[in-house]
Length: 462
Ligand code: ARG
Image (spheres, rainbow, N blue to C red):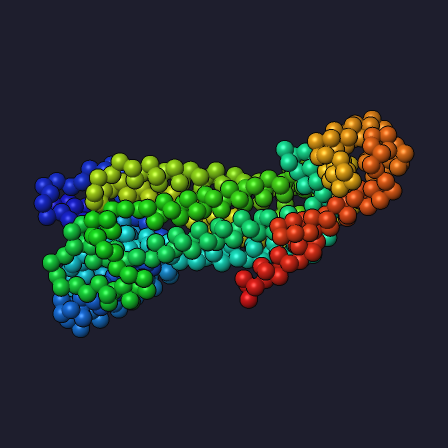
């Protein structure tokens, strides 16, 4: 027997050592070592359960748990020697355990398989990561609400088709972002509920002949319940796909915010100034201040969408139960977890600290005939049918445009050329302040509504 062969834990039925390339090709230890804490936690719970049902003695269980604690300390101190010949995180730890405590170590794997073990590890891991993602989501939500409070009355142009449409309040815009993130949080919570089911005890695929007590391991690992079907529990990764889907949607939202921040921070818009500490300069153009963090968040959205495609495609051709294909779920999942958590963290730090250049926002809203709809609505209130009002205002806009002025800058006589329904009071609706204040109903952009929504949001955080 070669050295290599003797390291592996399943060589009994093999007559030759694994091909060196195959060994490297099948190894996952270099990425799944990230699950060492969950793997050790699951193993300790399993050992304690085996003791409780009489499969392990007290001494064996104690040796196993102490040994696993020692291994965890070694890993965390950087003293642990990972070996690709031992394939994955599970066998690296199990082999180290046996090296450390002898015979008892060999009994740990009684009544389980790496198939239920990895499914358990990934669920424990994802549960923690979802909590971290939710924490960052809520930090960003709170930041947006405080920015909305600061800028509840600030006027900026609202766009459709990226053409100036109607004046809105900056606070209202921030609360639109906030709403997206509230739904993202709901999706994460719903995903968490389906993640939090325990596969351990399913063993390889059919369960085990040992008298296991899944209630014990379930309580110790704080899962909501043990899974009801062993074939399903070891094989499906729908919970991870669901996470990637929720993460992809969150990233899509962050990417849309990023896009607006990039535009707004451009001197051509000049609506906001991003804190210097979140921007970088150019190696050649001294005047540049680039919104790289926002751009990277927009870029990482692509990466996370890729993980969803990878995970869906990974699953679709698999017959029941476990297949090694599932080893390919780890890297995309880790990628999605890291990208969404880091992007949220970056935005939670950056966005509430941007400064709004109020004069620029205001000037932009004045330039684009943003109160044209208000003039049409005014005409309707004075007896003109909406279609006719639309036509009248369209002609007024063309007239103002030719003279290079805003509607509010036309004289009453000039406006009355287009309709004699127009009176002196028209100028109240042509101001930006009047326009936003008039949209004072649930969901509208009026500062008063923004403040009501802020109060509602604050209740979620108390
Ligand atoms: N590394 C494997 C995975 O990530 C662990 C389970 C391996 N099971 C097996 N029978 N080869 O899915």
